[in-house]
Length: 139
Image 1 (spheres, rainbow, N blue to C red):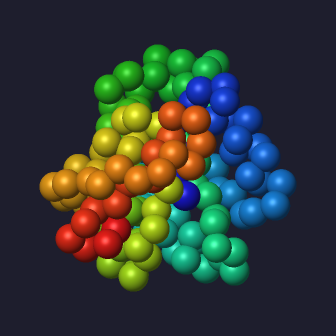
Image 2 (image 1 turned 60 degrees about the vertical axis):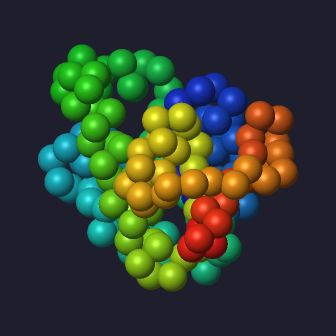
Image 3 (image 1 turned 60 degrees about the horizontal axis):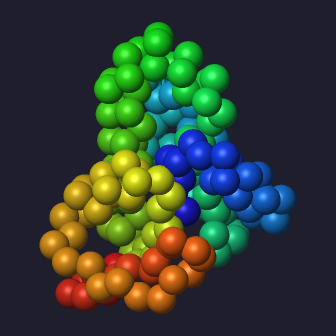
């Protein structure tokens, strides 16, 4: 699972998920300085003995605002999105075929980064959250 959404609902879902599953926080300062890399995040996700580990950058609004002031709004978003895309690509290369994403920009970036040309929309897994599948590759 990859979560870039910073909505209150998503942050609550991350907290609940973390009660029973391993979670790894993406720290924008570490990402920008190179102290936290896509390779590290991917390695951590793959090493978990749990079917649904999560890497998330879903910080509270004050933390996000501070990072945007310090690094710039676009640069902050670009670094986080690039990290999630690299992680998703590495997961697929490692044989992972089911990736859950949260957040519009995160989901769009992952879709673009995986070069998905078509998505079949499946059942709603939560209100407003459809399951989607790439029909050619089974992703």
